[in-house]
Image (cartoon, rainbow, N blue to C red; front, side, top):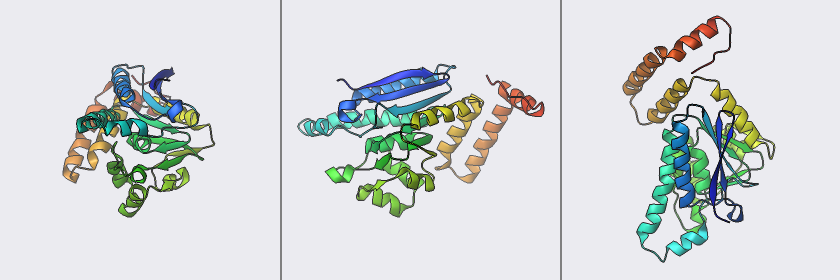
Length: 259
Protein backbone atom coordinates (compact mmCIF):
# COMPACT_ATOMS: atom_id res chain seq x y z
CA UNK A 1 0.00 0.00 0.00
CA UNK A 2 1.37 3.39 -0.99
CA UNK A 3 1.93 5.97 1.73
CA UNK A 4 -0.25 9.04 1.29
CA UNK A 5 -1.55 12.10 3.05
CA UNK A 6 -5.33 12.14 2.89
CA UNK A 7 -7.20 15.43 2.95
CA UNK A 8 -10.80 15.96 4.05
CA UNK A 9 -12.97 18.88 5.12
CA UNK A 10 -14.75 19.07 8.46
CA UNK A 11 -16.65 22.33 8.25
CA UNK A 12 -14.04 25.09 8.26
CA UNK A 13 -11.23 22.69 9.21
CA UNK A 14 -8.99 20.76 6.85
CA UNK A 15 -8.06 17.33 8.24
CA UNK A 16 -4.80 15.84 6.97
CA UNK A 17 -4.42 12.13 7.76
CA UNK A 18 -1.08 10.36 7.46
CA UNK A 19 -1.93 7.03 5.84
CA UNK A 20 0.76 4.36 5.80
CA UNK A 21 -0.80 1.78 8.15
CA UNK A 22 1.46 -1.12 7.16
CA UNK A 23 4.41 0.89 8.50
CA UNK A 24 2.56 2.56 11.40
CA UNK A 25 2.18 5.76 9.37
CA UNK A 26 5.91 6.18 8.77
CA UNK A 27 6.83 9.31 6.88
CA UNK A 28 8.47 9.69 3.48
CA UNK A 29 9.11 12.22 0.70
CA UNK A 30 5.68 11.77 -0.87
CA UNK A 31 3.99 12.74 2.40
CA UNK A 32 6.23 15.77 2.90
CA UNK A 33 5.41 17.07 -0.58
CA UNK A 34 1.70 16.44 -0.10
CA UNK A 35 1.78 18.22 3.26
CA UNK A 36 3.32 21.35 1.77
CA UNK A 37 0.87 21.28 -1.15
CA UNK A 38 -2.11 20.90 1.20
CA UNK A 39 -1.04 23.82 3.37
CA UNK A 40 -0.51 26.02 0.32
CA UNK A 41 -4.04 25.18 -0.82
CA UNK A 42 -5.45 25.84 2.66
CA UNK A 43 -3.61 29.15 2.88
CA UNK A 44 -5.28 30.46 -0.28
CA UNK A 45 -8.74 29.15 0.66
CA UNK A 46 -10.64 31.56 2.92
CA UNK A 47 -13.13 28.82 3.78
CA UNK A 48 -10.37 26.93 5.61
CA UNK A 49 -9.77 28.45 9.04
CA UNK A 50 -7.65 25.70 10.64
CA UNK A 51 -5.88 22.39 9.99
CA UNK A 52 -5.79 19.16 12.01
CA UNK A 53 -3.06 16.55 11.41
CA UNK A 54 -3.87 12.97 12.45
CA UNK A 55 -2.71 9.44 11.75
CA UNK A 56 -4.79 6.68 10.24
CA UNK A 57 -5.81 3.98 12.69
CA UNK A 58 -4.29 3.57 16.13
CA UNK A 59 -0.92 5.27 15.48
CA UNK A 60 -0.18 8.93 14.88
CA UNK A 61 3.22 8.49 13.24
CA UNK A 62 6.14 6.12 13.79
CA UNK A 63 8.64 8.56 12.27
CA UNK A 64 11.01 7.51 9.50
CA UNK A 65 10.87 4.29 7.52
CA UNK A 66 13.94 2.41 8.78
CA UNK A 67 14.05 0.13 5.73
CA UNK A 68 14.18 3.19 3.47
CA UNK A 69 16.87 4.74 5.66
CA UNK A 70 18.89 1.54 5.51
CA UNK A 71 18.70 1.46 1.72
CA UNK A 72 19.76 5.12 1.57
CA UNK A 73 23.06 4.13 3.16
CA UNK A 74 23.97 2.58 -0.21
CA UNK A 75 23.19 5.83 -2.04
CA UNK A 76 25.06 9.15 -2.13
CA UNK A 77 24.59 11.19 1.09
CA UNK A 78 22.72 13.90 -0.81
CA UNK A 79 19.81 11.47 -1.32
CA UNK A 80 19.09 11.43 2.41
CA UNK A 81 19.87 15.13 2.69
CA UNK A 82 17.21 15.89 0.07
CA UNK A 83 14.70 13.71 1.91
CA UNK A 84 15.34 15.55 5.18
CA UNK A 85 15.04 18.87 3.36
CA UNK A 86 11.58 17.72 2.27
CA UNK A 87 10.61 16.99 5.88
CA UNK A 88 12.02 20.30 6.99
CA UNK A 89 10.11 22.10 4.25
CA UNK A 90 6.89 20.67 5.68
CA UNK A 91 7.87 21.57 9.25
CA UNK A 92 8.67 25.12 8.19
CA UNK A 93 5.38 25.33 6.26
CA UNK A 94 3.47 24.36 9.43
CA UNK A 95 5.35 26.88 11.55
CA UNK A 96 4.82 29.75 9.09
CA UNK A 97 1.27 28.80 8.06
CA UNK A 98 -0.96 31.72 9.13
CA UNK A 99 -3.77 29.50 10.42
CA UNK A 100 -3.81 27.21 13.50
CA UNK A 101 -2.50 23.67 13.09
CA UNK A 102 -3.51 21.02 15.65
CA UNK A 103 -1.96 17.57 16.07
CA UNK A 104 -4.45 14.86 17.06
CA UNK A 105 -2.30 12.09 18.51
CA UNK A 106 -3.47 8.52 19.04
CA UNK A 107 -0.87 5.87 19.82
CA UNK A 108 2.78 6.56 19.11
CA UNK A 109 4.31 9.84 18.01
CA UNK A 110 7.87 8.62 17.51
CA UNK A 111 10.96 10.27 16.07
CA UNK A 112 9.94 12.59 13.25
CA UNK A 113 6.32 11.94 14.27
CA UNK A 114 7.07 13.59 17.63
CA UNK A 115 8.86 16.42 15.81
CA UNK A 116 5.82 16.84 13.56
CA UNK A 117 3.48 17.12 16.53
CA UNK A 118 5.78 19.64 18.20
CA UNK A 119 5.72 21.80 15.07
CA UNK A 120 1.96 22.23 15.42
CA UNK A 121 0.39 25.08 17.38
CA UNK A 122 -1.61 22.71 19.59
CA UNK A 123 -1.32 19.05 20.58
CA UNK A 124 -4.35 16.98 21.57
CA UNK A 125 -3.43 13.45 22.68
CA UNK A 126 -5.21 10.32 23.87
CA UNK A 127 -4.18 9.40 27.39
CA UNK A 128 -2.65 6.12 26.17
CA UNK A 129 -0.55 7.81 23.49
CA UNK A 130 3.21 7.86 23.84
CA UNK A 131 5.84 10.31 22.69
CA UNK A 132 9.41 9.23 22.07
CA UNK A 133 12.49 10.62 20.34
CA UNK A 134 13.90 7.21 19.44
CA UNK A 135 16.73 8.40 17.17
CA UNK A 136 19.59 7.56 19.52
CA UNK A 137 18.21 4.02 19.90
CA UNK A 138 19.20 3.34 16.27
CA UNK A 139 22.36 5.49 16.34
CA UNK A 140 20.82 8.49 14.60
CA UNK A 141 20.43 12.14 15.58
CA UNK A 142 17.14 14.05 15.47
CA UNK A 143 15.57 15.88 12.55
CA UNK A 144 12.28 17.65 11.94
CA UNK A 145 13.14 20.45 14.34
CA UNK A 146 12.84 18.16 17.36
CA UNK A 147 15.91 19.58 19.11
CA UNK A 148 14.71 23.16 18.55
CA UNK A 149 11.16 22.49 19.72
CA UNK A 150 12.19 20.61 22.86
CA UNK A 151 14.89 23.14 23.72
CA UNK A 152 12.25 25.89 23.49
CA UNK A 153 9.67 24.00 25.54
CA UNK A 154 11.60 22.10 28.22
CA UNK A 155 14.51 22.48 30.64
CA UNK A 156 17.77 21.39 29.06
CA UNK A 157 18.15 18.40 31.36
CA UNK A 158 14.78 16.94 30.43
CA UNK A 159 15.28 17.63 26.73
CA UNK A 160 18.67 15.89 27.00
CA UNK A 161 17.06 12.85 28.62
CA UNK A 162 14.38 12.56 25.95
CA UNK A 163 16.82 13.01 23.07
CA UNK A 164 19.92 11.20 24.32
CA UNK A 165 18.28 8.34 26.21
CA UNK A 166 15.29 7.95 23.92
CA UNK A 167 12.97 7.93 26.92
CA UNK A 168 9.24 7.61 26.38
CA UNK A 169 7.09 10.32 27.89
CA UNK A 170 3.35 10.17 28.51
CA UNK A 171 0.80 12.79 27.43
CA UNK A 172 -0.13 13.58 31.04
CA UNK A 173 3.48 14.48 31.83
CA UNK A 174 3.76 16.60 28.68
CA UNK A 175 0.53 18.35 29.63
CA UNK A 176 2.01 19.17 33.04
CA UNK A 177 5.02 20.63 31.23
CA UNK A 178 2.82 22.72 28.96
CA UNK A 179 3.62 20.85 25.73
CA UNK A 180 0.30 19.00 25.29
CA UNK A 181 -2.88 21.09 25.39
CA UNK A 182 -5.58 18.45 25.87
CA UNK A 183 -5.56 14.82 27.01
CA UNK A 184 -8.54 12.69 26.01
CA UNK A 185 -9.85 9.16 26.30
CA UNK A 186 -8.44 6.73 23.73
CA UNK A 187 -10.06 7.23 20.32
CA UNK A 188 -11.26 10.75 21.13
CA UNK A 189 -8.23 12.84 20.12
CA UNK A 190 -9.53 13.75 16.67
CA UNK A 191 -12.96 14.77 17.96
CA UNK A 192 -11.37 16.92 20.66
CA UNK A 193 -8.99 18.45 18.13
CA UNK A 194 -11.91 19.31 15.85
CA UNK A 195 -13.78 20.89 18.76
CA UNK A 196 -10.72 23.00 19.56
CA UNK A 197 -10.39 23.89 15.88
CA UNK A 198 -13.99 25.09 15.79
CA UNK A 199 -13.34 27.39 18.75
CA UNK A 200 -10.41 28.86 16.83
CA UNK A 201 -12.44 29.06 13.63
CA UNK A 202 -14.81 31.49 15.37
CA UNK A 203 -11.95 33.95 15.96
CA UNK A 204 -10.85 36.63 13.51
CA UNK A 205 -8.44 34.95 11.05
CA UNK A 206 -6.23 38.03 10.75
CA UNK A 207 -5.78 38.13 14.53
CA UNK A 208 -4.96 34.41 14.73
CA UNK A 209 -2.34 34.95 12.02
CA UNK A 210 -0.87 37.90 13.94
CA UNK A 211 -0.64 35.94 17.18
CA UNK A 212 1.03 32.99 15.45
CA UNK A 213 3.57 35.27 13.79
CA UNK A 214 4.30 37.17 17.00
CA UNK A 215 4.80 33.95 18.96
CA UNK A 216 7.06 32.55 16.26
CA UNK A 217 9.28 35.63 16.23
CA UNK A 218 9.34 36.25 19.99
CA UNK A 219 12.07 33.75 20.84
CA UNK A 220 14.68 35.49 18.71
CA UNK A 221 13.55 39.08 19.25
CA UNK A 222 14.65 41.70 21.73
CA UNK A 223 11.94 43.23 23.90
CA UNK A 224 12.15 46.48 21.94
CA UNK A 225 11.70 44.65 18.63
CA UNK A 226 8.82 42.59 19.97
CA UNK A 227 7.08 45.65 21.37
CA UNK A 228 7.34 47.35 18.00
CA UNK A 229 5.95 44.26 16.26
CA UNK A 230 3.04 44.07 18.72
CA UNK A 231 2.28 47.76 18.07
CA UNK A 232 2.26 47.26 14.31
CA UNK A 233 0.05 44.18 14.46
CA UNK A 234 -2.36 45.85 16.90
CA UNK A 235 -2.79 48.94 14.73
CA UNK A 236 -3.24 46.85 11.58
CA UNK A 237 -5.85 44.63 13.27
CA UNK A 238 -7.70 47.59 14.78
CA UNK A 239 -8.14 49.06 11.30
CA UNK A 240 -9.09 45.70 9.76
CA UNK A 241 -12.83 45.21 9.13
CA UNK A 242 -12.85 42.50 11.79
CA UNK A 243 -11.74 45.06 14.39
CA UNK A 244 -15.03 46.91 14.05
CA UNK A 245 -17.01 43.66 13.90
CA UNK A 246 -15.42 42.36 17.10
CA UNK A 247 -15.75 45.54 19.14
CA UNK A 248 -19.35 46.24 18.08
CA UNK A 249 -20.38 42.63 18.78
CA UNK A 250 -18.78 42.70 22.23
CA UNK A 251 -20.48 45.95 23.16
CA UNK A 252 -23.81 44.65 21.88
CA UNK A 253 -23.28 41.28 23.63
CA UNK A 254 -23.65 39.47 20.33
CA UNK A 255 -21.62 36.73 18.66
CA UNK A 256 -19.32 38.23 16.00
CA UNK A 257 -19.25 36.89 12.45
CA UNK A 258 -15.72 37.54 11.26
CA UNK A 259 -14.63 37.83 7.66
